Image 1 (cartoon, helix red, strand yellow):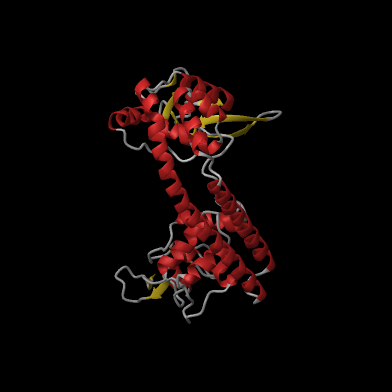
Image 2: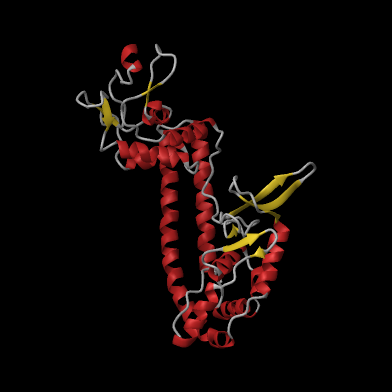
Length: 357
């Protein structure tokens, strides 16, 4: 067995996701199973995100058909052990060999993916529920790009000697040309918005266009509500199944508490989305805000909530906007919104006003 491992071969029965095969040309004696290997890979990928607990991932891949060699469902313990086995990243090992050896077999997951999963398992990468797409504290994050290298800026709190400071900066370590405080960048963005003015004809005809958009939004909102209701019921069912698994002794207390908390958070988030979708205001309010956005874009952005701010800025500049420390905002072409409004003023067709406006 020691000699086999040192030669890069696996001297035991193939684990879940692999098949024994002694006829491979490169000398390997196991190979990925075309049926189960994709499910094993998906399990690693899901758990690596940090969004799902082990129990949630196990539930997903079990429902998709992953089983042991004897056709049984994986227990939580077996699944946890599977996520720690280096063989899936292409390594073979034995207690008689001091260090893992690079195997001759094809791996199911990359080394990077395997290491990410180990960080999640050890707690170095904390489990989390899906994050909001937009951080309310940093609305220009990922939207404004570095004027030197084109990398989208990131944003966050940087620790100083006595307190934390809110900043945006270029996340390209090689470049790093932009580092600006949150207050400075956002105030300069508002000043830049004040310089933007659409054509008078587009403003005059906008109420008619916006009314058509409102009618379409009502249809889209109804569709979204149906999807959210389905999502809510799915989460409630999964939570109920988790409790049943706990009562059957398939889930330990720690995993149960973590997963149950995650389900509660997800259910609450979906419920909030449902409430927001059901109370999206009136046509008059929509027209007032839309007109304000055209006449005074900077004011519209300043009073908007985070989702509305992101909608405004992304609709103005679909490809983002560049920023350089000395020259400030570099975009010289007319915003995407104004180009579309000019076209619509001529054809009087519906305009795709973004969600949240």
